[in-house]
Length: 118
Image (cartoon, rainbow, N blue to C red):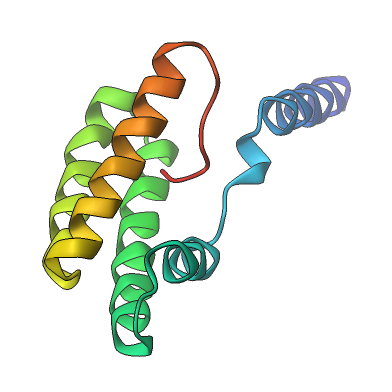
């Protein structure tokens, strides 16, 4: 019984730490697509396609996280999603999206934290 209680306390502590580090703050696929719709002025059709794309990505990423994969294992999934997303966008939207991604990447490298995109 003591071992069970100890394991519960450990799990609760780990959950609290993950949430404090932003693990519980991930945006849903719908929220991410809605944000892009606003930023890139997407059509409803584009938004629906991107929402579906993000849902597939979220499923893959969750299974990788559950398996204990690190960021390097998740990178191919993120890269594939970005390429598929760009195929949905117009040339102007794709350029604006790439600029947003470059700015977020630069911000992360400067220690500014995540931009909430990926």
